[in-house]
Image 1 (tube, rainbow, N blue to C red):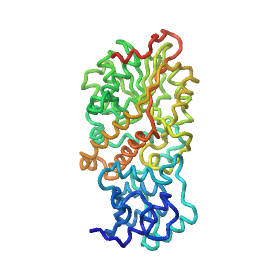
Image 2: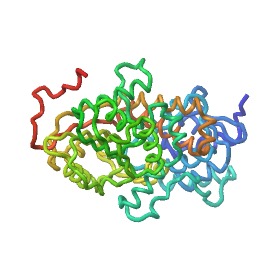
Image 3: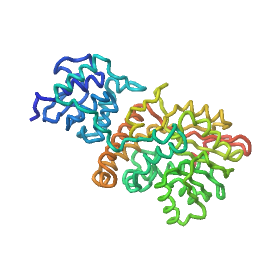
Image 4: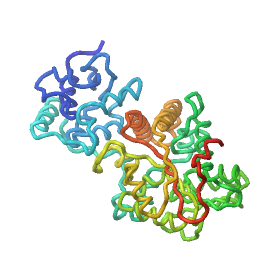
Length: 439
């Protein structure tokens, strides 16, 4: 039976301060103000008995929180294995993300001076004071590569996220090797079936025809390029700035016997100069572009497309209203350094301002929640192998980011949209735009 005295009640006080749940506490009643059950390193427990169980396995976790009293400190402790979530990972993260300051959109609101004093006293009482622990080695350090969204720094950011091992991604993504939102005709479909439907849907929206030339911007592991070449007879140029992705895509292209129809380049989108293309796909790539580069991104792709050609931009959106970037939150530090989720309205304004006509917008928010839950299931079922292929910290990062992202899509904080546009000139679109629904 868990001890009811010890470190846990004091630890609950610290967590209540960080989360901003309830009034500033002065005693063990703070345990009633936290949304989880806490287990401390000495085996003691505090908090609601039926709530998800979070274990602090080391005082070092509290020390990290004292130095970074917010999402960053908690994230570092989780990645380092000093905090563990027991049971259903979605329940634990949902409890934390819906509490106090963590439920507020925008940058995390730091503790007030009085709250910091309470944290310091708690750290003294629990013997947690000491130097700031070094961040886990998986934390991104892209700032040393120059200004934000320079080509050099973008390459470093992409490498941080994608060059962590093709075998690791195959384990998480499954045989389809598609790292973007699937499309589920119904929830009984498998992940592979849903990804196949997404790939074909994009081909139909672009109205691909044999002999056309397609540019796939941010081609990932090549699944869309292969699908378009095999099923629709187009010639594809796929670009990525991940060397590990390019290596695997080229192997897949050769194995499929499509080297005459699919070319894979390690190339920044800003350096493409061999248009025109009949169609352009950008699936899960523009999140890496950045707000300050969005107009340049649109202008570049517009210049590469023939008059009347279609482009599909598939991107995650921020749905929770105006917000500022928080460089000290979990996602930019560990998952997508320099990435930005823009609102749908920002993207639409840039596309129309860049000379495109919007033909269709389809929201796929619920589909991404299903996709992420399937990826988390793959990861958890193959946890030991995932750790062997990368590190325990890397596997923890992907587990946290995918589970938390699924909850964000389910809550409507984030969305994902396919925006189909056409360059003016050339052939007119059909009178009924959604001809792809009959495919």
